[in-house]
Length: 139
Image 1 (tube, rainbow, N blue to C red):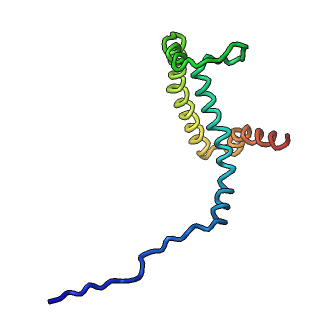
Image 2 (cartoon, rainbow, N blue to C red):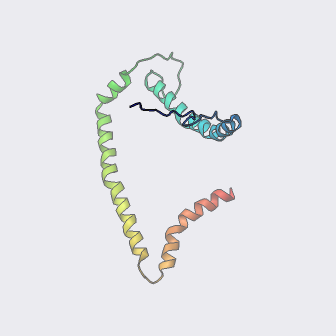
């Protein structure tokens, strides 16, 4: 018994070359975001990294800048003042911020209740957010 195999001459899928005009349009739409990210995120990050690896002071002096690599980090981790500051910032972060969020949530729940002068109280809480936008728009 002879088995026949059928072969098809049609291809499964064609690969199309992207339209050049569409690619240019997409690049033009992405360009502002890429430029802004580069200018405001990537360049400052690289400059900060470069500054951290040199003996460059924050206030420029006429001393020559040389690479000290990780000596700045070694020196700061050996400083007791750094560890005190880190402890204070950590305490602030882990106590004050949750307390602020809890107070804001409690205030929101209170202002959601049926209270006399509820709309006046809501306006008083929302007024600082509105006035800053108005001042910016007027300027």
